[in-house]
Amino acid sequence: MRNVLVFVATVLWSGAVLGAEPALIVDTAFVEQALRRGAILWDARDEKSYAKGHLPGAVNLGAAADVLRDGNSEDYVPLAQLQKLLGDAGIDPTKEVVAYAGRGGTAGYFAQLTVQYLQGQRAYVYHGGIDDWATAGKPLSTTPARLAAIKVTATPAAGLTVGTD
Image (cartoon, rainbow, N blue to C red; front, side, top):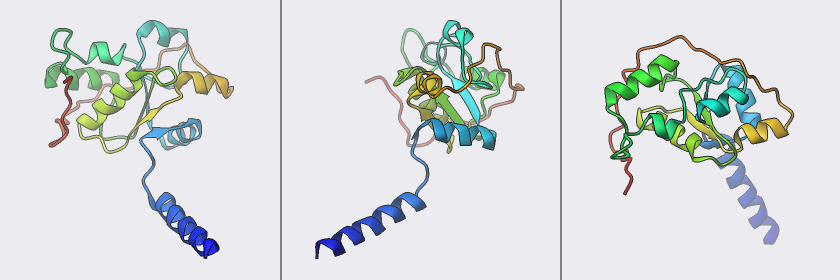
């Protein structure tokens, strides 16, 4: 009986894993694959940290939580400003976006949530961030990456509430 239960559990687990969408929190191997697919890499750290080294091709618009939030209310900046900031950086919420910061850094999660907030369906966060990338011996760049500016027209997702309460 135990073998039958183990077999059933294995089949159910493999079906769930193999048929499932990728998790929102991703690892180094996922980031490498995403780069091959042409995903946008968003370094959500501050400009000084970005300048010291970042994943090759990653764009940066400063510390995401500082740049994209109103300093007084802590809400997002007005929608038109949010769209312009992302558009100027070439961050398109309709594309695959992988955001990161330092290992477990909240800035990466905030950036990923921002893409979801603007109805992005393929927004991921690289939890290990630049720390795991460097530990894996992957290359870093100090050359700023620039994507072509775009017009972002995405609006907040209905039913997704983002607040500070």
